[in-house]
Amino acid sequence: MSTLPEPASGRNEAKAARDTGSMRTRYKRVLSFCLHYWMLSPPLFFGILSARIASTLVDVAVPVSAGFLIDAIANGSRDNPGPAFRALALFIGLGATFAISRQLVTFLLNRLSGQSIAAIGRDSFRKVQRFSADWHANSFAGATVRKITRGMTSFDTFTDTLAFGLLPSFIVMVGVSAVFFYRWPVLGVIMAVSIVIYLTVVITMSVRYVRPANVEAREWDSKMAGALADSITGNAVVKSFAAEEREDAMFESVSGNWKWRAIRSWDRSAISGIVQALMLMALQTALLGTGVWLWSQGQATAGGIASLVATQFLINGYLREIGQQVRTVQRTVNDMDDVLDFRDATMQVADAADASPLQIGKGRIEFDKVDFRYSGQSKALYENFSLVIPAGQRVGLVGPSGAGKSTFVKLIQRLYDVQGGVISIDGQDIAKVTQSSLRQAVGLVPQEPVLFHRSIAENIAYGRPDATRAQIEEAARLAHVDLFVNNLPKGYDTLVGERGVKLSGGERQRVAIARAILAQTPILILDEATSSLDSVSELYIRSAIERLSTDRTTIVIAHRLSTIQRLDRILVFEDGRIVEDGDHAQLMQCKDGVYKKLLETQLQSGEIVQAAE
Image 1 (cartoon, rainbow, N blue to C red):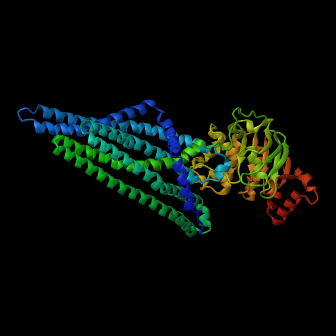
Image 2: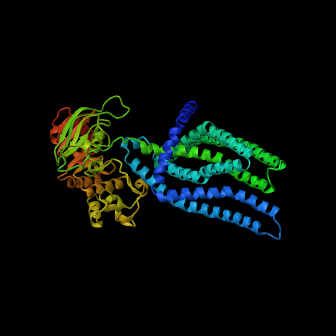
Image 3: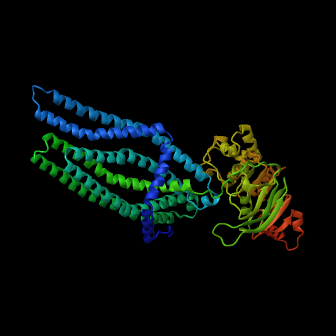
């Protein structure tokens, strides 16, 4: 049964302890991040801040006004109800002002949050899109999506918690303590000391007791999302091997690891809540008991006691929620870590500070003493590798898997940076030009073409979005896409499904070739472009490639050697070296040559009989 590796509990606890030591730094980092997006609209931000402070001060004044009302009634007379009605008007007015101002905060916050969340999603998507091919190859797409969306949701929750929870709670605690100090100093001391003790216990439990469990649960939440996306994306393979039960078992294992961690996280939150409830009961007893004692000593009126009771309910509500708010803030800070990591990550392949657009001419490619090693590998694939491909030359790359063919074309696109030497196009070091201009000059038809869940026409026009319908259809005709599109109900407007799943492998390959034809790039790379085609279709595509490659620097990686027999030059790779270099006729003259042996093997196996004919 396949499972994802389970992190060691001790390692996570140690990590949590280290994180606790840097908590101030982490909160500073998150606050800086949030402030950046809040300040995208300063009027909205300061409007929310002002309205929230005002509404909370009004909320503090409501219990005091209730005491005034009771005293006015208790000390007044029916013959002179004016003071009572004025106190009633004050009480109702303050309540209405609080309700209106709170709703104003909601309306303003809706706009600020919508704007900020959209900007976070945009910026995260922009950054992740520009991460290297190596990063994407080693990351679960589903987990990456989950991290971004979870960060966006967490920002919204964090903002709401501050605006409707922690900020008003802080104002209420300070305001109530000040009122008590003014009216009954002993109650002010009890309130201030109780709040300090309460917050210390709540924050300590949240950081040292609840948070470590939350961190582990979050890690396995991402693993579960990644495993789910990986299995669903590969559903065709699952079905082909009747592996549904095996995948069920794998996901059950992953979800089981998440389950007990999530339960532990929730249980710790519940225990923290019980501790808070007990502390609030103690505070309530101390406040009301002291209030009754003050009344017995003649230092508090009936209205004062009523005001105390109402204030106690007010402060109790805020303090009861503050524990949950602290845990929520802690969780959202954790959940925003991934988005902040994306933002702060160093680009693995970055444009130079003074990078300029590639000035493409005919497309001369040169490798000059290039050294390259994949990350994590001890042995270099290329060492002091040099090669020149003249402009307009059509070159085939052959050799066993792992010989360096695909790496060669990836380095031309600068999907990886070399460790030594220079790769240049038309005399320009590709490390010193912008990546966008470089890749716009290089057309690619990959071995496994990826299509978007869009129409066939949109997929063909992806490299040239301003193309007319006539140009799209002409490119499709040259790639023989028209042979199957004309049989579809919606023709070129047919949606191809996720990753092109509605089309066969050969059909997807033809669409990718049509896309390259339409892009009309000066340099063309075909990586096993005919590998998914039957022999008859391959003959059609070969003719299209011959027309397509005219006056363009063309590099063709091919398993079927019939695809490259008519090219100007054939390079035979072995272990990152070129062991043979020449055209088809020249290489066939090499006694015991690698290319000759490969071709003879394919002819004997019948793999290229039809093509050869």
